[in-house]
Length: 231
Image (cartoon, rainbow, N blue to C red):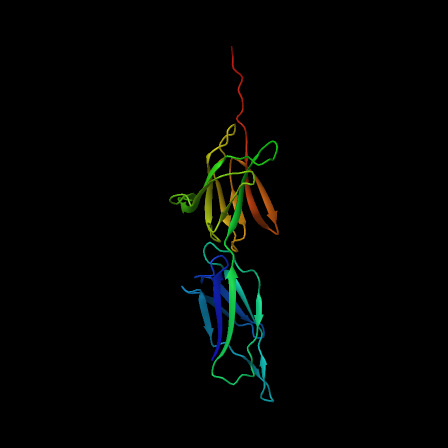
């Protein structure tokens, strides 16, 4: 029996991670398998053929690739694709290939900047909620996942957001001299490495993007419009 075993661990805690999904492909035959890690962070795929038997009795080893296609909650995907082969010279009832992978926590940067100057604004109190679809629109689902007060470099949410999930960012308190920005609906990309989609009908959005991924989300604040008074 030929086995392929994956161990999925968190880079920050070294603990096993559940619900990481992998795709394994036999590059010689095109056959595809899928596997998901269990509670201890491990997954085993049985019955993979070592290779093709040649006329002289030797085995030409198949080449396999393994790719993580869905990360665990609150973690980024492991982007690299691993190639491997079984040792066809071993005379055993079981041949094992062992592969250990580490995932980094999700880390998303948020900022508020001045509309006129583009400079970061400190003192904005911001909350992030998980979103739920109801009656054709997204609504806040439960209490805030996190709240923070923006500093000169904004603030970063680490290990709070999950790949593929939709969230709502709401400014609870604007800095002195600024008006509240409208809520922002955003989606974490499938890799957990950045923001995929953003929706905001009222505020101006500035997106810092690299390689098709929004790496930071910035809401732009305006000062209130001053109205003349009559004397």
